[in-house]
Length: 107
Length: 122
Image (cartoon, rainbow over all chains, first blue to last red; front, side, top):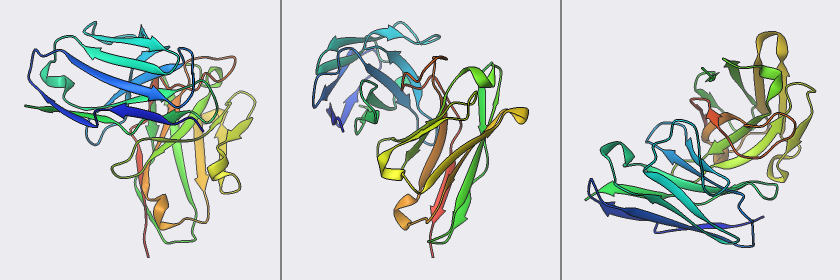
């Protein structure tokens, strides 16, 4: 199975900050990388698919980049509703696998 | 709007089985694969498999082969996931999630159910 490693595992930031989360795959996955946001007690929500395509209804402050093994999720200006846990997920090879998550907390 | 509504929380004893339902609405049920994903407390999500609601074809993750069965009832636009021989480490929230593409599985998930907590405890 492909291992997905996110860093950092948690971070503290303030409203308005630019935040970057990194995801690394254990082998090349081209651009088959997706990002989700999860609030406590809720289901994950799709933010970005195919490394850089914004899912319908997702604010433009979210963006994704990368290909091969290294990917980033950037939030350009952190909003109060963005404090959550973020997961990357590869859809290149079955089984699809997720990272362990990055928790974004209020500083 | 697309909605996936799951059945309620379950408490089961080790060795028992659990069956979780996922009622779809707001789109053509037979047009999109349904995946099942579980999330143990404090862990990242784990994919369990998919069902093609049109054909009934399934693909299960190797970790669950022999213990999981996914079915559907197109007349009521509902998918089901049954997990047998439950163990304590099966305690998790179980989600159904829709694949965004119709002709084949793309293995990412654009809409999710609200989750069903399954607790396995003696």
